Image 1 (cartoon, one colour):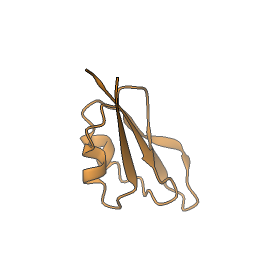
Image 2 (cartoon, one colour):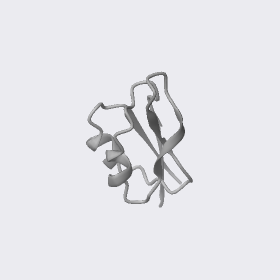
Image 3 (tube, one colour):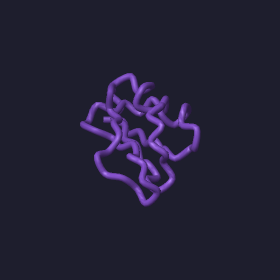
Image 4 (tube, one colour):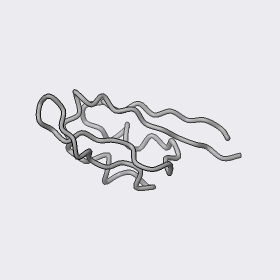
Length: 72
């Protein structure tokens, strides 16, 4: 049984520190080319490699990441 994951980032609260990017074991997070209302490049999921490990949410200093997991 495999696990498929996904993240949701509160784009307006994300400061683009990229701690989540550095800690993602599958490289499924990047900083967006777009900016939020405060001028920060926010984190976003890229591709479909997320395994739902929650490392990004654990290390996020502002707690703006929600992780979802689904068994497939």
